[in-house]
Image (cartoon, rainbow, N blue to C red; front, side, top):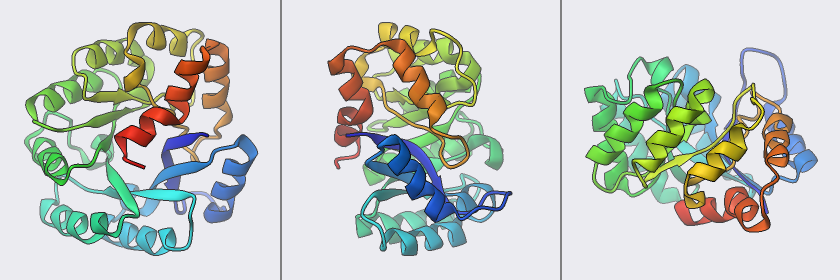
Length: 238
């Protein structure tokens, strides 16, 4: 069983049949379930993107959704959380801090994440560089919040290790277009394996990079299972 906790649905800025590509990619790599955000919601319009994703999720059994919210539009975020979480098709929330211009410690993002905590679902939050430490700070300050550090800081994965060790409600997922040698092995050695998840950034990035990095880490069977699906099953109550 493999659960991809960081994937996307919908058109990017290049031509492709995304729904077909998504399923074909999952089949190629043996990914059983994906939790996806709508590309349109992430990079353009949250309301229309979430609405389109909701309609598509009703047609598939292999995908769950993230409700994408923009911390600068909290009224819209509140409406979308109320509309889509009760359907059961959406299992969490996606926040892209760079595209929205709202760092993890900004008042807007703190308020948005407080809403997420009150809703009782996890949030996948884009992190890059030192922002992963800021996300851990906001998580510690927000009772009940559970957050996934998307890309686990990318080139600052050692800061992600520090962040996860300082906040047991912060989870790490590894997707990135570049995987330095030893990155996954070092994270696994220093972070509680219950805080580690598997993500690919599909369909923006081919999953081969994430799979290759996991294979190179030579994980023991229990750790590999935890990362591949057990932790995600518990976190998202799948």
